[in-house]
Length: 217
Ligand SMILES: Nc1ncnc2c1ncn2[C@@H]1O[C@H](COP(=O)(O)OP(=O)(O)OP(=O)(O)O)[C@@H](O)[C@H]1O
Ligand SMILES: O=C(O)c1ccc[n+]([C@@H]2O[C@H](COP(=O)([O-])O)[C@@H](O)[C@H]2O)c1
Image 1 (spheres, rainbow, N blue to C red):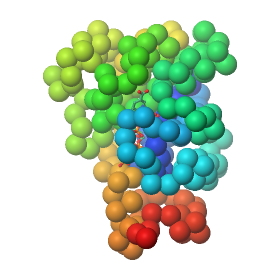
Image 2: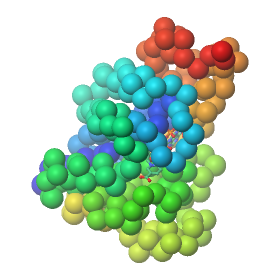
Image 3: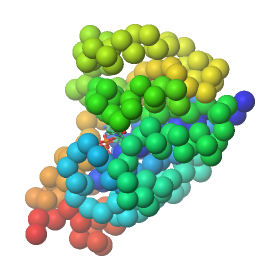
């Protein structure tokens, strides 16, 4: 069986080093063959992103282009439909086959909200879920909503070898370098004409500046 494939969805408004380290470290911690980045075109669960889906996709492309183990999937950006993860995973299953191990990568804050996602319990029929630690967001059953806590307790595997042994169904956690970077913080800095340098790649900052993004009108 081929190595598990990481699936990393996000709004990426804009992409930053917290995202890049999550994807990079997940490969080593979880034994992934690579990570497929999937920018959300039309995130159903939050305010409309500040820049267009095409611009967020372009920033993810420039941030990831030098890593041969990263790929970028534009399908959610190219669709007008709400970006529901369960539907994206169904598409990937159709494309990659029933046996390919898929590992949905989420930060601890995103995981805490999983029980509000569209058809959320079906996600476990389609993929494993790997939760990375994020400053300020504990990953423990007691701090999760009840229905999610039950799934977490039932599915949690301490041995990441479980990710290779089956196509989906397990939950694992992994500790990444803790980086208290958020896209919200970056948008605020840029709106106030302050430096966001070293929080995200220079190539992304160049894109932001050449397209005059995140500035106050
Ligand atoms: N610094 C970080 N450390 C660990 N995980 C992160 C970090 N930043 C984002 N993530 C995870 O990356 C995924 C995509 O996040 P998203 O694009 O919403 O970034 P964000 O920085 O949380 O954005 P915003 O501040 O706009 O909410 C989510 O699963 C999120 O939990
Ligand atoms: O499918 C859903 O209902 C759903 C609800 C909330 C978030 N998601 C996905 O979770 C990923 C991270 O979301 P965010 O808001 O942290 O960028 C991104 O790929 C979203 O499309 C998906």
